[in-house]
Length: 357
Image (cartoon, rainbow, N blue to C red; front, side, top):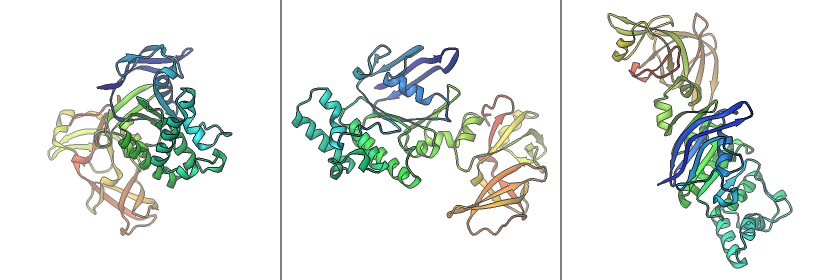
């Protein structure tokens, strides 16, 4: 069953087109992450789903019913905001149960729902505190509890972890995903953080400049980005990109543009003479004295689990290689790298679209 469907959805603010004819189907129970840089339109799309922004064109359907003209309170959607949006004068139990009071639910039923949500989120001991007495993570749990008691058809999260420190963000990622798995509710989650998207989503919807660039699992976007933008956005450290040309030599197709020609998959023969961008993940680069990609170490970054060598070729091109932490190397050292031809990504030099090889 399709829980949420966007049909040619567009949004304009005056002459500025923010969303451009988006089409997307979300299955019931899916955890979908809308990912993209600031200004790509992901939060606008979320707010349109909630009814907090009007729709300029197209339709949004929830459980098969078009909700373009439906008031936010009648869409049966629960939303968790970036800034928590808690009532400062109310205790935690009252914040969680407020929407139920508005719906005129009986007090005993409200109490049971609030206490059940508190147990699920491990905040039972906080029910009689006010928001000012809570940490950021505790406030976010309260905001989640307020959404839980709604028994909504769709849960919307608008960058809920942006205000938390790195350790707490990692912890809350796990909690939100576990909560989703327990409730089985359809979830739309907005973030600009690729780690959040890659670790939490069933599917990622990557957005750019008001368009959907690619939809797929973490593995889809990481292993088979369909364009250069997707390749550069997904992955840490960022993928290495080199401009050059495909040439077919006697030994097979080669990428020319970085010192020695780099071997390419045999299928690249059909692209002889084509201008391309060659993209290589930093962890796919292997130190090899006979490697075709030489460079000089500019800086060494220690991450604890490995080393990141920031390199520069003789022609001034920079790239990054991830190597084992035991690797010897310091600034000024010359190294060469080899790359498995089957691990490279090739994109058209003009359009940025992925080349099928």
